[in-house]
Length: 216
Image 1 (spheres, rainbow, N blue to C red):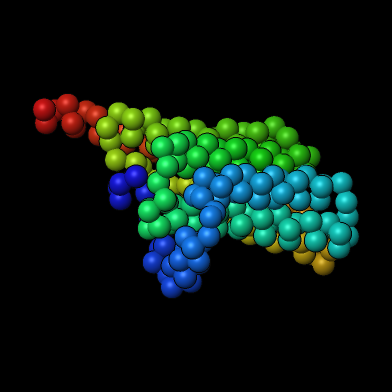
Image 2: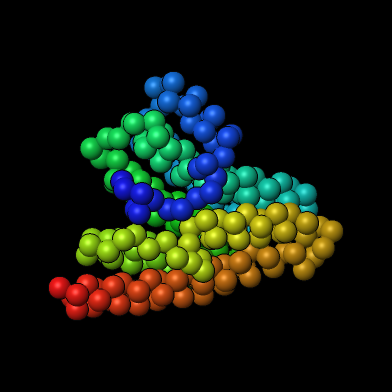
């Protein structure tokens, strides 16, 4: 994976990330295993959102907090699989597959789980569909010879930040009832924002291909 094909993340250059990466490289843990772990974290996040929909009170709040936590663990797995692979020199022949496939599964598990928990399954599936579409358009452009396009407004890190914030807000519903609508509102924002993101990436890919043809 070249530098232009990696998602720009400022967290890669932090001391704590490099320290954790160094410890991981010393173990037998592989980047692909970390990628697989991201799906497990996403499954637990989605389950937390889903289960919260059938509970109430502080148990519901605890489930939302767990969903937020596992959304962030999913992102940490996404960070460290790349760091161990690239900075740690642990590339594998099937690494490109495990770099992308778990992310799509994770998006579906989290967003559909959130939709089920919010009693809005269609909205959850819509958000998940548009989230997967953003990645599809990016990879379509890259397969056509263009640089990977990570523009937002609802790229992966933005989706997870929003769902984490929504889960934490919903945890305060026993004290602030309107917070109970936070997850539904977040799913609407993800669905609309991811749809817009896919359109922006598609338009940029078409322009890039035309510009390249014109320069040939």
